[in-house]
Amino acid sequence: DDVFGRAEILATIELFEVSTDRWTLLSTQLSTPRTTAAVAALDDRDILIFGGAPSLSSCEVYGVPEQANNSQFVGPPRPRSLDTPPICSMTEGRMGCQAVALDLPAAGKSYPLCSERCIVVVGGENGDEDWDGFTRHFNSVLVYEVAHNSWRSQESFPPIPTSRTALALCVGPGRVSGNR
Image (cartoon, rainbow, N blue to C red):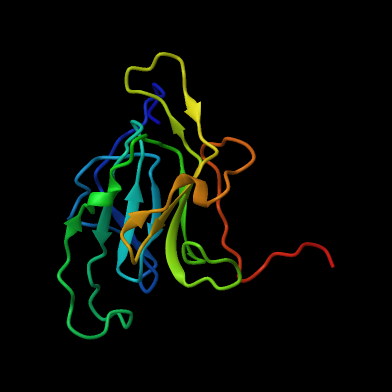
């Protein structure tokens, strides 16, 4: 926020390069300026940017440009583009949500067979640009199936118990079982 409490909505993208220990401002920008958006890696080259203020219901897939002398990128470079998948329009926008990439069971299947790469978008809030004093906080969890380029029904994943905005997500290696 600036000194007057307004969030700065930007179209810029910054990339942290581990090999140089530096941030780089990329020349390609988002097609829609955003703040408080959710971001998750679709794979080792593409990221999904979802929602953001002012309560956006859109998302973008951003192709991270190849970096010179980076062993992560082998073979011929894929064409880079800023692409908006048709599935990315949601009926209700949200900002302050978080996203994480997870392998989940295929639709109609159950744990422990987690074979579908998904982006899970959790929580957030919806407050219109013409703020009327009402902000709706979400406890819903949205699941985007990467291979199918589609959203699962909202009933396919249980909601979080308490509606939250600006929450934190953590993916652990395996099952977290608590004290032994």
